[in-house]
Image (cartoon, rainbow, N blue to C red):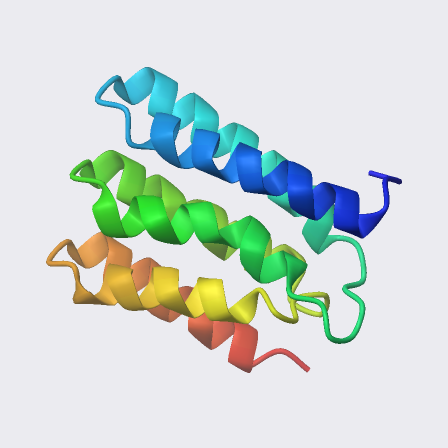
Length: 132
């Protein structure tokens, strides 16, 4: 994680395509595994302070958005909402440019018919806005 941020940006361009491709896999076990791997990697970046005028958090969270919008799997969509909720609640004070992707995931979840997605989204949003 000590690499220069620009180097990570270039690496991420390749990795994000991989995460999206595998996250949309019809093999549920593989898709779940890659979502958890993505969550762990993104958490490392969310724990670090984002520099002004940088958009790295948003870029690192984008695979969740793309998969959420394209996946037909309710299990994967629920996992994404849970992952993003957990990441935001644990790093709410560090999230800067990442809010754009967070809101895109939540907007997609609320537009979905599956009520669990909506409830978790509303719960997370409430917890974030009621923090001191």
